[in-house]
Length: 170
Image 1 (cartoon, rainbow, N blue to C red):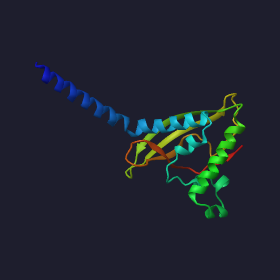
Image 2 (image 1 turned 135 degrees about the vertical axis):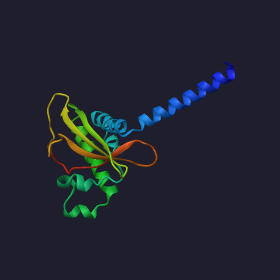
Image 3 (image 1 turned 180 degrees about the horizontal axis):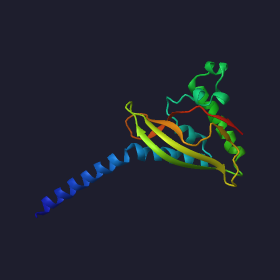
Image 4 (image 1 turned 90 degrees about the vertical axis):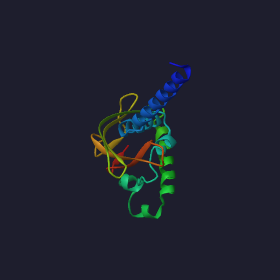
């Protein structure tokens, strides 16, 4: 085999391997796990910006958190202002818990690509503190909840676009 042919085989093989890796990495299951891993990192790091960075631009904050951020007067606030309000609230929450930071555990039980390009993920989330306390109570519980993830642009990364409305108490 000539050196030119060997180089060609190596280049074609490396290109094929790169394309296969990218297709695997772009799959719904891999990207869904990466989304929740980013949420875990942001929550455990106390990063309110990181948490909001995992929300899709189409995420309806008022519908997802009706008790905290919904109601009649919520319609007067646009989504950008609502995100700023949530950013400040999360920052305050993370500061309150700085001595006993949050621990975020998740188990994905089902990932389903939808016809509209979104991904439905069934996930169980456990949110506690480093000392084992559970300062936040979610209704309904975060067991086997369905989250809708979606891409924002051409890159395969997914972000949270919606979920069952939650009520949370501290």
